Amino acid sequence: MDLFEKCDQYIVAREAEEGGYYPYFIALSGSEGAQASYRGRPLIMCGSNNYLGLTTHPKVKQASAEAIETYGTSCTGSRFLNGTLELHEDLERRLADWVGKETALVFSTGMQTNLGVISALVGRGDIVILDKEDHASIVDGARLGYGNTRRYRHNDMDDLERVLSGIPDSKGKLVVVDGLFSMGGDLADLPRITALCQEYGARLMVDDAHAMGVLGDGHGTAAHFGLTDEVDLIMSTFSKSFASIGGFIAGDDQIVHYIKHHARSLIFSASLPASNTAAVLAALDVIQEEPERVQRVNEVADRMRRGFQGLGFDTGSSVTPVIPIMIGDTMRTIGMWKGLFDAGVFVNPVLSPAVPEGQELLRTSYMATHTDEQLEQVLSAFEVVGRNLAVI
Ligand SMILES: Cc1ncc(COP(=O)(O)O)c(C=O)c1O
Image 1 (cartoon, protein in one colour):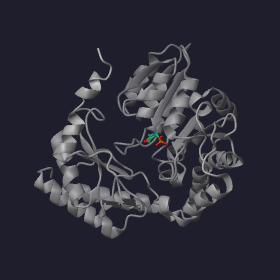
Image 2 (cartoon, helix red, strand yellow):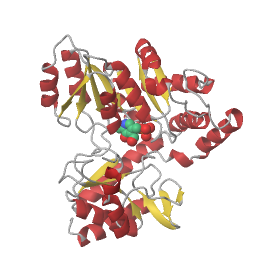
Image 3 (cartoon, protein in one colour):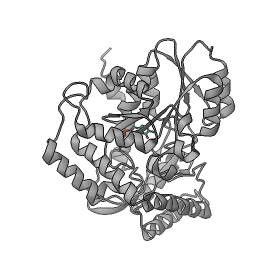
């Protein structure tokens, strides 16, 4: 059989493209944070992870540009060999301090952080335990390791206990959860999870990609719950509130030291460019200088949640700036996306298999820099399109 046969048979996305309802890989002609444009047409961006609106902050842009002047455009090698800059180490000290851990280690993306950390820690005979709604990079990190994976129902603590209690004491156990779930906008039940990990001798890693800069005065989910010491490893990415690209893991020095020498995605991939590293350092400065941004994004989220609920939309269990609009049907989800897109609002349709069939949704997300006027326009567009499609 020809290996490429499956490619020839893959026509579903082509059909959607030809039918004018393909919602992915949309090439924006401009992106100024809360406002983007498509073929010159303005769009209110409600589908990014730029929670604090820092991608266009003058200090962040300037720090990034200056770093290119100083260091050039690339490190052309891995952290392990020629690609470590003093700037990386400065950032690692700042991040460790920011999340309240001894040591941090910077990777080139969040995906690589999860791949490298989980596969380095979970060896043969060990077990990694995942929430069913954990991010794909966590699932792939677990697959890459030599250990076995067990999954529990989303945020279901009885089910987590069932899984943990079924694993012999002799096995090493790592529970990995999203702090803020990226599709549902709900939070991991860290008070219960930390207690269960202690009871069953499991280590805990929290992926704070969406909570860093947003929860716990910007310090993340563990800080939000006052449980920083109970969480063994805090992971996050720079591709969201920190307005850059890259990722990091933070924890006890000896654990991070081990990861540094065993994570293949760190050792065998080029390091984070200076411009991206400097952008994160500047973003941290801005978050400290302008704490009102963290407050604003949460206020915007509350207002939008109330607005959607008032119109009759189902916002699931969201308590954060990620607000899903539950639709529960593929065609209506795509219809809503298209209607909103044509009305100048950018959101993300989330379809099966990314969510179970019947739980299709629109993922919307908010920024500190959305204006009140933009938010009103978004709600009005949702009202019109939602009524047209009988979603409300
Ligand atoms: C929860 C979570 N973890 C990890 C990642 C990966 O981060 P990055 O974009 O830095 O690769 C993402 C990004 O989509 C995410 O949402």
